Image 1 (cartoon, rainbow, N blue to C red):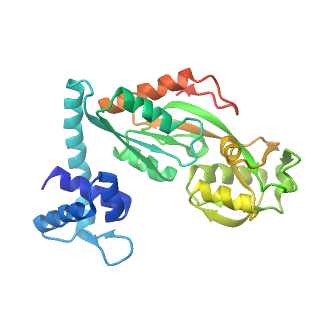
Image 2: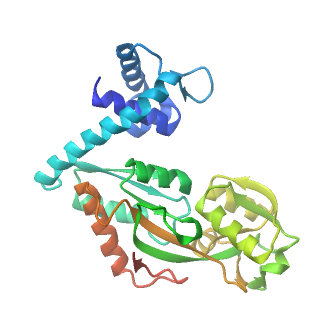
Image 3: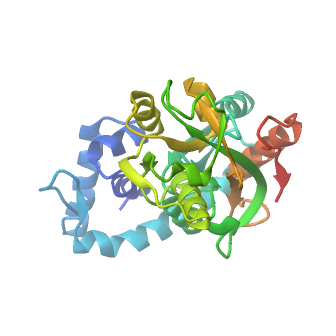
Length: 306
């Protein structure tokens, strides 16, 4: 059994398909399928049920999963030790992010990090908050941008920096609220809403705001992609709460909410005060330096040390 085979196995588990797993591992699908077949042949059991549209683990696959995680964690620890000796000439770091992150220009920061450490491979995963949290605690991610429920991180996780993002109501051009520029929560009782699916950081913040204010929203449509949400609002199917920067970038009317002014807390989190992975330590140092250098962007999003 090879570490490479286990990594391919975990990629299929994480991505949900052989095609997506091959893409994430930067190999052709036939090579990944062969790797998985060889692993199954060596173990004497099928690890995936391939009969449906989405591959799922068999009982044998579920039995292998915790062992594969442990073996890969051990192999990663060995690679990290070598990377530390070689001065980060090689290595791998995994970072998770919410899809609607606006307080940090993550692509720009990762590009700057890559320019400084070209030998380090960076893996980026965007997913719902609960999935990111589980992956961070399991060691599958080194760092993650989260929107913790009630602003509190689960036990065992550390906040390295926090931001406050202002949420605004975006509407279609010509909507009755667009010209006003601001409104009250109670004035939205009859409005149809477009919303993210349950479990995302934005949906959690909006649901908490609505519950606090006694607003029973009528959800016309729920989506999983911020681009689609913006397009549906533009088309007039409903209004939505989004971070101000997303609304402004989309060119939609941004209506401020009074009493209370809605917002959400974004946290850059890790498993401890400093990652054990040298590549992750280097990335964290880069991200923290960028946060400290930020001039305090609009919307009250100046970062604070965790």
